[in-house]
Amino acid sequence: MAEGTAKPKAKRASRASKPALKAAKTAKVEGPAEVGEPASRLIDQRIHDIGGWRGETLARMRALILNADPGMTEEWKWENPVWSHGGIVCTGEAYKTVVKLTFPRGASIPDPSRLFNASLDGNTRRAIDIREGEEVDAAAFKALVRAAVARNGPPAKATEPAANKAQPVKLLSGGNPQIAKGDGDSPVQAYIAAMPGWKRDLGERLDALIVRAVPGVRKAVRWNSPFYGVEGRGWFLSFHVFTRYVKVTFFAGTSLRPVPPGGTPKSKEVRWVDITEDDGLDEARMAAWVKQAAALPGWAP
Image (cartoon, rainbow, N blue to C red; front, side):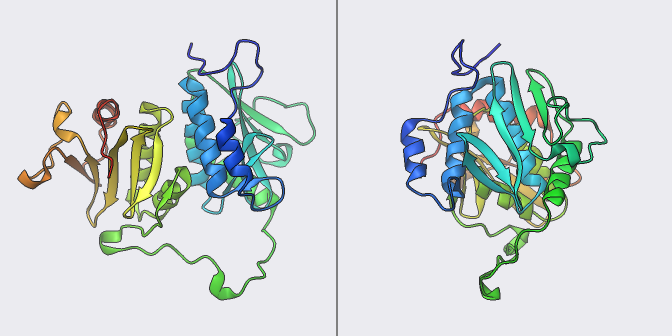
């Protein structure tokens, strides 16, 4: 069983690298926690350091948490990932045999699907322990996250002028979300959350598939498109919303087998596949392409 970088006697998974921790601690935003992009980078680093099934599981559950609530904030507290909205929603920890998601107020949150399976004797906390090979029902888990947000209550009213309040994401030509350039999972999840209609579900499925196929995958938003790559090897894939389809582009597409169908004489080695609502996503073929693409030298603009 893959155990990433955990030491045999350690109770917790390896921590983020000291340079990463030092960088984030110099960019504190509020109180003892690092929030926003520094926190997202630390969580990216934690997932990369853990590796194996535990890193893949933590990455998958993180994506579900961020997809469940567009107002979710990533923080780094107690040297662990923390997700908050109006208060802490849950924390994520990796142990030797489980990935644990702890809900500090879980005892007062409705759990009709009975996802909570740990810390059941306490008066306040509840937790979900996920072992190797186990899958958590995505829809039920997102409902649980939303219930935790509702239990925290509405956040304090903002004191800044109305002009400074967050505005809805602008959709560009073809319905493509306009998302500022950024590194890490947060801008990618913001893009996916803004994808219109059926394309949002497709974006969630693509993101989860890529995370499963390439644990520790590097993410970013560039040119209003999510990009996926391997650290030190460049980008291997991106996708973009168009009116009637979502285009998934492989930068070394001519080296994949089978070669993705989209391409022109001017596109050189780049190839793509256009996914429509009627066609749907062929997950098996897409996963095979993603694994092949991640093993090849990527594109470094």
